[in-house]
Length: 153
Image 1 (tube, rainbow, N blue to C red):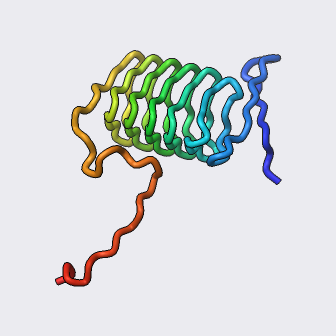
Image 2: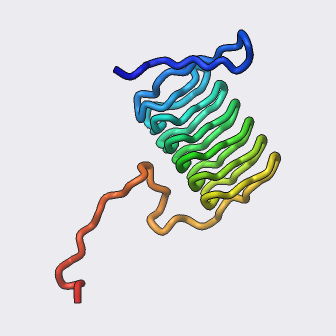
C-alpha cells in the first residue's frame, strides 16, 4: 500500500508535511490550495502557500514552490521547477524540463518551450492568440478522431 503522507526535514527540526492529492496522487502541502479538478501527477510536489487554478495539469517530477500562483487550465510538463512567488496566467503551457526562477511572471496563454530557463524576476508576455482548438486542453490528451473513408486517397 502506498504512503498517504510524506515528511521532509529541510533544516534540523523544521519538517514539512505533504499529503497525496486525490487526482493524480502527487504530493501537496496541506497549506497549498489545489482544487480536485487539477491533476497533480505522482512525484510532483506543491509547496505551502501555492495556489493552483481549476483544471490545471502538473506533470511528474515537477515542483511548484512556495507562494506561487497558477491560473486556470495551466499545463506544466514533466520535471518543471516553478520558483517561489511566481505567477502563471490562465491557459499558459510550460514545456518539460523548464526552470522558472523566483518571482517570474508568465502571462495568460503564454507558451514556454521545453528546457527553457527564465531567470529570477523574469517575465513572459501574455499571448493574444487563441489556440487552434480554442481554449487549452484541460487534460493532457485529447480524444482521437477517425479519418473519414473518403478523405484517404
